[in-house]
Amino acid sequence: MTPPVSISRRAAAALFLRRQHLDRPRARRLTAATLESFVGDTCGLQIDSVNVLDRAHHLTLWSRFGAYDRDALERLTYRKRVLYEYLTHVACFVASRDLPLWRATMAMVSEGPYPLARWGRAKGNQKLIAEVEAAVRERAPVGNAGFERPKGEKAGGWWTWKPAMHALDYLWKTGRIGVQSRKSFQKLYAPMDRLLPKHAEPAEASLMSAPEVWRERVRRSLAAMGAAWDDDLRMYWTWPRRPASWMRDALGSLVREGEVTEVRIEGESRRAYALTADLPELQGAGRSRRPSRGTTLLCPFDSFLWHRERTLRLFGFFYRIEIYVPAHKRHARLLHAAGAARRTPDRARRPEASPRRRRARGAPRALRAVVRRGRSAADQTLGRARPRRSARRARGLAALARALHRRAHRETRAHVADRAARGAEARGTHARRRSLVKQFVRTLTFFVAAIVVLVGIAGIAGWATPRRHHTRVGVSLKASPDSVWAVLADMQGSPAWRRDVTGVKRLPDRDGHPVWEQQSKDGAWALVLTTIEPPAKLVATVADTTQGFGGTWTYTVAPEGPGTRVTLAEDGFVDPPMFRFLAHYVFGLDTPQRAYLRDLGKRFGEKVEPKRAD
Image 1 (cartoon, rainbow, N blue to C red):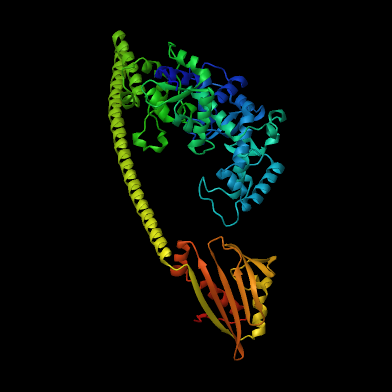
Image 2 (tube, helix red, strand yellow):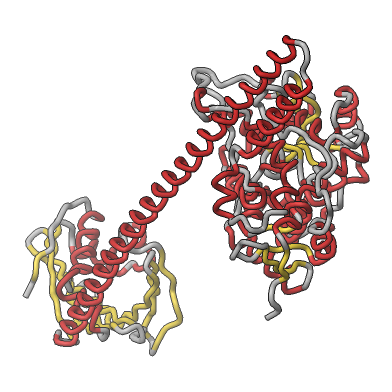
């Protein structure tokens, strides 16, 4: 086996910045070509409803292109269709140049073993989908607000969707409709064939297969990250979700074919992966003097932060979205994001620092850097200050810098303590899970052993039980002997009154005797009518004894006062010891005969209870 290629953490971080278009933040101009290149290279531009500073996609584009014309973005997105809305990590703008991949994904999720496909195939949903699609085609552009909620149903929050919204979501994800535009951030839909150019749509025969879709997904993710671990591939591009084995199979096939190469990143024991074509650029990235030239702010929904554990491993930068954090514990996390992008070369020049130390001090490091710059500026101002007002202002700035430095120190300690507490809690949870798993395994082993012992005992008891048996059961009916005989001899009509018989079929005679096959939910068996003596006696013999059982049923019809006495005797055998045990001691040898006679009584409108006729 070829050993993995070793690369430095600095090289992996530098190429990641380059592939995320952060090597020269806010230095490019927003055009159709640069917009499509950025969104295609990063696999998507995330859309989110959080609107604190601005919408997520506007902040992400500003971090790459600086100030830009929003009307131009609207034209490029919703008129020229350089981008359109679909899903990768979550809901995103994706590049129209990649339409063949998305068309294949849409076909895959509409037909494969996905929850979305199962919802669409449900009988109760097909009519709803057809009605909503027809309404979109007739009234486009139309959104969720254009459909009424069923009478009596109340809205219950974001995720209590009306039925039409479920249908719209299904049609969008399967590619039958698309987002034509947005009004107050609400999606307005139109048929997909009206939104995208005809020449951009692949023929049905040219659609990629599902395995090739997953292989292409791995290629695109690796290209967007440069070098990535398994969990990076799983968490970067998250839709549609499928078992991890699908991703492993696609990755394994690409490794075997040489398109992907295993690499080992400095300071990490786990193997990572990179496109073989990217290895020269990856190794060259570690030699660049300044992997990132510039500073910018990163939106919490930036593709750079889609997998935050990756950011922690490569940059020592811990980040979490603070809308879920109590207000008194929040501080400028966006400043940390800017520091992570700027501080990447500095961290790469410190190979002596262990990954654990980098993670421990990662959260407030950017804040400390800003504080140090503030204190330096204050010292310089104090050194050259002449007027008293300037000196007071400089002393105030220095005091502020010291206060920020103390705060950064407190936050560092709190962050380390918080990570230690969460680590202890995780270890405790892991120990409890292992204990539960062990207990479950012990219980399961006990039950399996008990079942094996019981089966063994039953088998031994079956060997000790006689192979042949004889039973005789009788019942009295009010009907005449002739009418009873007519029912017994009519094998063709038995399914009409026997609960265990679903059908009968006449087979070729055997030695001059008629043969009938009776069918039930448990199988079929053939009976040879060896003796027919109307209206007194009928003998049926099992034709096929290869299944381990056989014998004869003897039906006797005799007058009894104004009614009839019907007796059913079985002279049979059972070969398998287990079946013999069950027949003798669990089900009862005469159970089939009793069921037959009860059904016969019901045929004549009587409720009877058969009794042994020894």
